[in-house]
Structure formats: structure tokens, C-alpha cells
Image 1 (tube, rainbow, N blue to C red):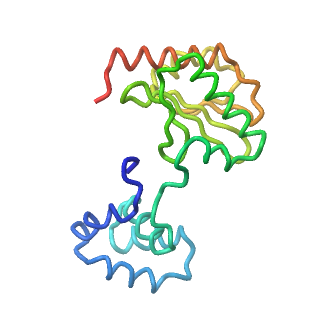
Image 2 (image 1 turned 135 degrees about the horizontal axis):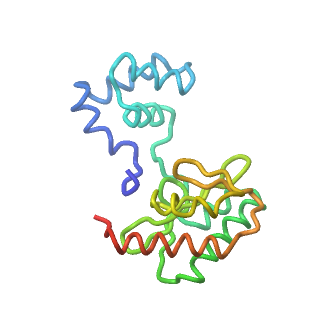
Image 3 (image 1 turned 120 degrees about the vertical axis):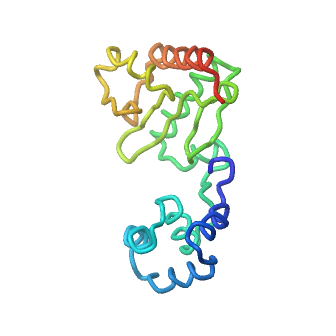
Length: 188
């Protein structure tokens, strides 16, 4: 889905899997248009066996959102953030790219992601009250857990304050470990 963010890309599969043309599903959506988003999703899942992804594609398209893409590049992502978060995310990305200029910063899943060749190795996203940084390798996260005592570590992410005084040593060590992990196990 990251390579084709258009919600309509799901439509041929939806028609094949659920046995009705999209016009039928848009008629269904018209009948439940006054319901809230979660209720519409639940309706499609419970009454028609939709997967979450297919239900989301139909509901969001019917609500006027034809694409899952919100940002075309890092600049547009940063422009969407309040100043403190913008400065911190920018510093995180700049720290990484200054130290590793061969890495590529892309927008995927509507957040900045860092790639090493074809492999995603690191991501950052802004939440309401904090930022999440994410090495794309669970083993790297586990290996670094002893150094992350001052942070909330989730299953795949590390929560840092919106105004994080970027720990450059930690960040670059994480990136180095992620690069090393991709070189041991190539993407593919």
C-alpha cells in the first residue's frame, strides 16, 4: 500500500473477495453515512466479513478521502507539525543524514522513514504529546533496551519527549546497529 496510496487500488480485490461491484458498496455506505467512522468500519467487518484494510479503504473513500497519502515529502510532513515537534523531528533526521549521507529519507505510512538501500531501518512520528522513534529491527531494540532506561519502550518504538534534547550518540548507535542488521540479513 505504501507504493500505491490510492484507496481505489483495493477495489478490484474488494469486488473479487466480497462478490459485489463497488457501486453496491457505495450504496451500503450511503445507507450508513450518518454513523461514525468506527461504526461504519464495524458494520462492514461484522455484517460483510471485511478485513480492516478493505473496510478502511471503502469507508474513507466514501467519506471523500481517495488517497492514504497525506505528505509528499519531509518538508510537507514537517510543515504539519507544531514548532517544537517540527524542530525535534528535523534535528533527528538531520543528525542521521549528516552522519550517514548515503541513507535516504522518504515518507511512508505518512511518516518520515529512513532507508538503507531498499530496507527501511528507522522511522519517526509525532503523536499528540510525544514523539516515537522506531528502529525497524526488533532485535536492535532489544539489544539497546539497557540503554533506554529513561524512555518508555514499547513493542517496536521508543517514546521521547516532543522537545527531546536529541541524544546524538544513542541515535547514531541505533542507526549503526540497524544498518549492520540489514547488511547481515538483506531486505527482500
